[in-house]
Image 1 (cartoon, rainbow, N blue to C red):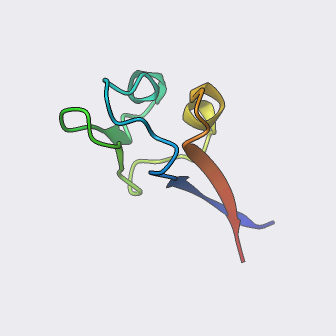
Image 2 (spheres, rainbow, N blue to C red):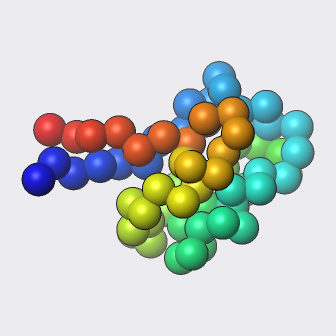
Image 3 (cartoon, one colour):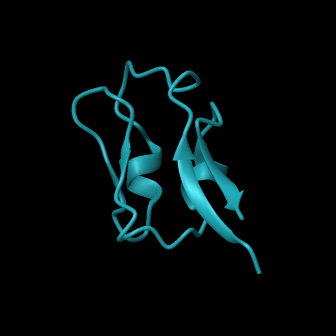
Length: 66
């Protein structure tokens, strides 16, 4: 089984509003200061994919690591 890692593609993130995906995270692994791109707390992230499925800009993605 391959591991997945949540990544933010900042070029896709508008960074002009409060990120709605922050509230979707069930464990509070996403943080946002002002309107900047969210920051991922990898110690909390459970890789559930809720935020990446929720993000309309597809700026949050789960990628497979080798």
